[in-house]
Amino acid sequence: MARTGTMMLGVAVAAALGGGGLIVARMNSGGAPATALTAGGAALAAAVAPPVSAPAGPSAADLAAADRAKQVEQLDAALRKLAGGTPDFSVAVLDRRTGQSYHYRGKVRFDTASIVKVQILTCMLLRAQDAGRRPTSAEMALAKPMIRRSDNDATTRLYNRLGGRTAVTRCNKRLGLTGTVVNSRWGLTRTTAADQVRLLAELADTRGPLSASSRKTAFTLMNTVDKAQDWGVPAVARKGEIFTVKNGWDTRSADGGLWAVNTIGRITAKNGAVDVSVAVLSHNNRTMAAGVTLVEKIAKLTRTHLRY
Image (cartoon, rainbow, N blue to C red; front, side, top):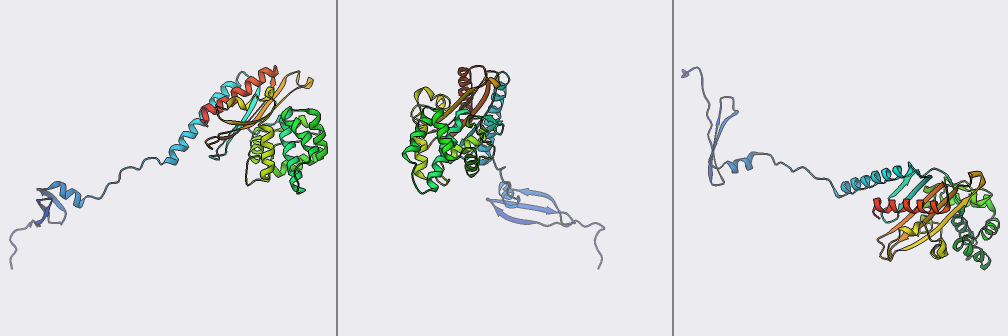
């Protein structure tokens, strides 16, 4: 049977009712679409085009992480600028609500001066717990002036009663204070800002080694320091917030008469909106007053930039 012509054009017509319109598709001889004639183009696009997903935006977690990174960057910059013209310092912050921490030179060791008294208090409380008892009246008679008035004689007596450097070193390991080196002359103990916020966290941790009674004792003493000694961390607290604090200050001829000035403490709110531990350590201050001004300025910078 003869074929008519040397070229055949295959035509396929498909009709469908889509969106009220007739759709006509013409196919070439190879079966691929050549043209599409529509009376209802929108319906055709919906029928044959693959779905296009809108690009997913950043998650809430991504946005929070980016905001935190910006906070840290800005605080780092502010502290570097301050460090350019001031004595040596370090700072650490721990937010117990979020679990976020911040360190600026947080693992550099500084002399404790009297902030070591919080370590001594904590070790005394653990010793009493281990013996299945509360602190004795004799122990508390030393602990109260040690924290509230920073009494050095009471500290020396309690330190020796506990077993001195050996006992406090063993206790510090239990508390996870890996960067602290205890000295037989307790005020020359070397510590880090990171260790100090770790210690403050242990004083508040319901799952930590300290019992509820021990935590309450530490809080009460550090919340009732002598008015003349409530500088440092308390300068960051806002109206209605609660603070605990222990400060340390010392000058020695070996340091050329310059001052070490330190502050550690917590700021909390009754509604739970704030629960932050802060440690600021410094040395080579020309005067004690200058050191107090410096550590308070640093503490305030952490609150400004970390927004706790």
